[in-house]
Length: 430
Image (cartoon, rainbow, N blue to C red; front, side, top):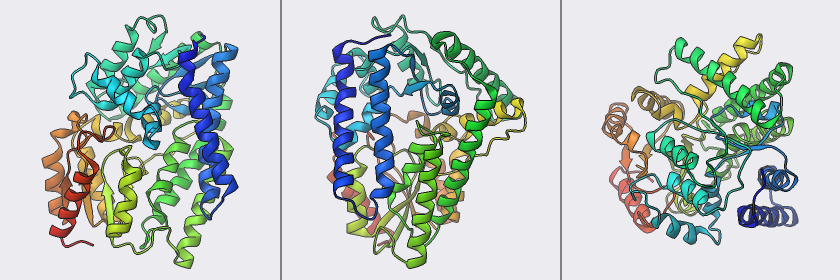
């Protein structure tokens, strides 16, 4: 399906934006450029391929990182995420203020998750390329389901075929079998709508490559247990971008992981951490706010605080058994139903939160836990007291902020810094 000019404006701007960043990194390299350049190249290639699909009438889909991206890689099927623009705005693009004002005009309650309101705004404003088909998400909250229902009924999108893998609530073997069948049905849908075909030998090859990526991610995660931690937060977010997005199952993504591990090992060996004078080892227990680019340097410089782990940098993934077709489907089901960030924690019971916090605090020698309390994460709000009690039992100071991860107007960054400073002072940290 094609798209009009407005639907391509943001994609073209992203291409120019990432090309400028890439040129800067290549023209003025430093000791970290070799790790940042492949990530920027991937985002640039993703935007270019979206543009190519629209202009040349090639099939492509809108989907999410938790819908088994190995399948899209194996089918050579291009995809993008409908809310990715919210994270591009983290670089304070020229549209940041415009988009936030746009969501204020939507007939959607203001207490609905800002990420989901942004996703709806992108559709309503006609600034997303209309895909061949959509693979929706029904987890971890009712809000994301409502987003897809609104898209399904939108005048410009109602003719776009949509499939939604149905996630069971529980995590037992029956649930994994059920979700494995949902992934099989998803493939049938994609083949019918795009004309692309899935070959099991190719899927096995891709999954084995993605297994290598997850093995290296785990190895890197273990290296972050070192004191001082070899890298700051920016590079720690890279594994998620590689393993669960458009480099999933691709050898050049695996090569990036090897480079990342080698750099971390060198820094530990030479005692040359990227972040100097580390004093506080922090667990930011949620996804990353778009304004982390301002908060993280302040944490490092003002307090010597390094975000050692978060939901996105955490690596609890199970390798997929590729010995049989059934094992591959079950492995992908488990990885995407039980292991992926935010969905892993919020889809099921509160024990998911407690287990992760207790394990991470112990394994990574965490000094304190910050729960940002994103205004849209109402599915997790009732778990705050349980998380606080768990932290009290293991002796980890716990701070509940109350912010909007995607709109700094909700809680000004200076107020966030002030509350964190008061917390560090009160707990005798830093």
